[in-house]
Image (tube, rainbow over all chains, first blue to last red; front, side, top):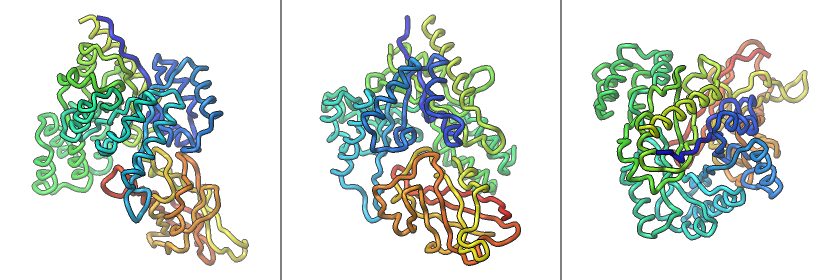
Length: 331
Length: 128
């Protein structure tokens, strides 16, 4: 069975180099295209310095730049500053207005998927559905760890989408929800901060056995009298779920884009933490046709000791995707 | 995520007349993966050798003109873009103290999707 899964990159992946002025947005786009990942996910609040004021000329320049590299937009990552004011939260009307602003810019850029931050209330999104339908933008609520596909908060969005019968509201999974193994990059960083190897091994073993995190945190913090780095490492387990990849098919109709989160790739182009070897076959089996968009988030775990090379990390992930997709097609 | 980069140590310099400095300034980047409206920069705490300088002594300028931290709270039409240097100026008679001293900065940000404020911390040893 031939898969129609497409590949791309989120500009989030290159945050280290862009922050330091070592890569421009065009460098990121050119790199994505060069490794067969021409689908570009942008964060306008990161990648467009004049946001939210974007002229038609700027829109044209972006579209021309992507075309020059044979790339295309896949997704627009929105934000919602409900705490913009110190004295009060945004009203519901202000929230809808802010989301409308993003939907309009998304549409002007020619993008048909919008990543909705997970904390946005389903009833607010319901109010935005008419605009999303009018502009033909799919609003996908980011399913980000520690939430997961079947978390009750996510099911509320699914319920709204079903009740309205709309194709313009759904979800957008972040693959961090499939953390089957504890990331070695996390462990190494905590050890550099003073965590003892016997304690970090205990935490890794507990995660491997899928022991509910609060047991481990109590063991480390109280019984083992863990130091600051050890307790901090144990607390990362609160954000390290391993959702069941077998359920992907059930939810595939609700998403058109995936944030392919990862923290570090091995030299042999395997991921030591996220269960892509289980996720990709499930996506292929479901006949899913969206974009796997690389979201490298390893910079913050290694920048204290290594120069970050986001390009090499992303390249390795796409070698893995090609391999896993081909294997699943042949199966 | 970018703590170690938020103070640019090469930019620390005294302000005012060379023989009677009125304070010092340095450039900083926002320790966050996107830009943020200035009203959500809750605090910029500057310390020398661990001693915090008064909030009122600090002004911030991302390029549109200096603001006090209190004025930033309602600067709804201004943003600090991702990766862009901004200038912090601190009023301190005599300027940055002579010899080697630790300059630290804590950025406290109000990130709407997070349940708690976000803190970015950096410290650099400076010798003017």
